[in-house]
Length: 136
Image (cartoon, rainbow, N blue to C red; front, side, top):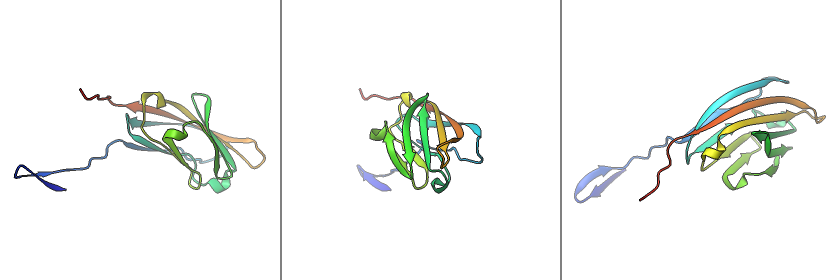
C-alpha cells in the first residue's frame, strides 16, 4: 500500500510472521506420536487434530494432563479456553489465539472408537517464543 507522508512516498507492508500451523494427524490406531510446534508470543496457532472427524466419534485434548477440549460427534461439548480458542469440528482444526507463555506445554490428543475405547494418542509439544513489548 502506497501512502504519502509530508510529501514523501512511503510504503506500508503487512508482515505476517506469527502464525504457526502444526499438524497432528492420525495415521494408525494405537499409535503414539510426538510433534513439536513453535508459536509466536501474541500470535495464533492452528493445530490440525484429526484428518477426518467422520471416522472419529470422540476425541479430547489434554494440556499437561488437564482436559481442555472434548469433542463428540463433531460437536465441542467442553472447551476450557473458549475465550481464546476456536474449534472447527468438521475438519478437526483447533485454533489458539493471543498466545502467551502459559500456552506452552505438552498437548495430548486422545481418540476413541465407536465403542468408547481409546484408539490412539498423539502428543504435541507447543513452545511459545518471542519477546513481549510494552509501550513506555
